[in-house]
Amino acid sequence: MPTQNIPVIAIDGPSASGKGTVAQLVAKSLGFHYLDSGALYRLVALKATQTQTDISNIKKLAEIARNLEVIFSDNKIFLENNNVTDAIRTEECGILASNLASYPPVRVALTDRQRAFCQTPGLVTDGRDMGSVIFPNAALKIFLTASAEIRAQRRYKQLIEKGINANIAVLLQDIQKRDERDSNRQVAPLQQNTDAKLLDTTALSITQAQNAVLAWYSEACANIAFELKVKAP
Ligand code: CDP
Image (cartoon, rainbow, N blue to C red; front, side, top):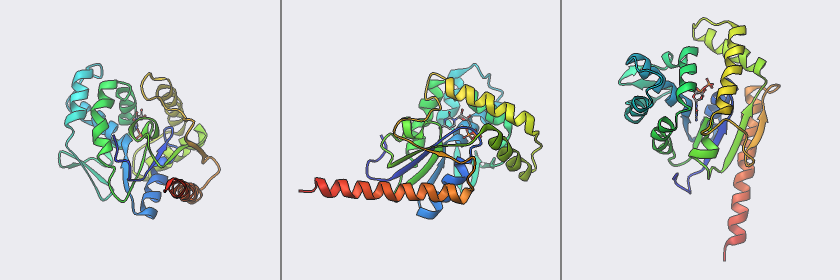
């Protein structure tokens, strides 16, 4: 289990909601570490493609997940010493990641690797099950979402900026399909848990979303400090 005394901010939410951008900015503001858990599923997908692993071969996919040789450094991601930062961002990789993320052995194989990111002074992480499964004791849990149309527009902009071809209507369809698959799977489904705060960013700028998270975190810290004071002998 994660280390109890290290603060974690867990931001979960659907595809292309902007949770990664917000999580990174919050981590920077607080001087915390950052974990993009979706990147791990995308890395498994990339490695499976490179090794022509069948998507139905769950045992082999779990083995890939367990043995991933990955380094996160300065906003870049290296798989076996190759820079795959952009290669894992394609829609194909995202769709494959979403498919293999429904296999419990793959999720179990990635659990300890994710928890190892919980180090002082703290961690901000984003994904689908950060608050529910990986860091259930997180100091702050957020469900960050936006309308599917706005998310398609955001993903379009992100892909075009990376020089990756995209079609907004196709992206919207992909996002809706991914929402359905991520929400309806048996293990760690995408859902807002009762202890998570809802942050709908449809009409919010990135800075407004970042500030909302920081304000909630200050509030959570004040509550924890108050509880400790009350409990003190
Ligand atoms: O691009 P998008 O934000 O949708 O996805 P991502 O965060 O990069 O994750 C890619 C896929 O991995 C998602 O569609 C999820 O199915 C899966 N995932 C997951 O199951 N659990 C996580 N903690 C993170 C991602």
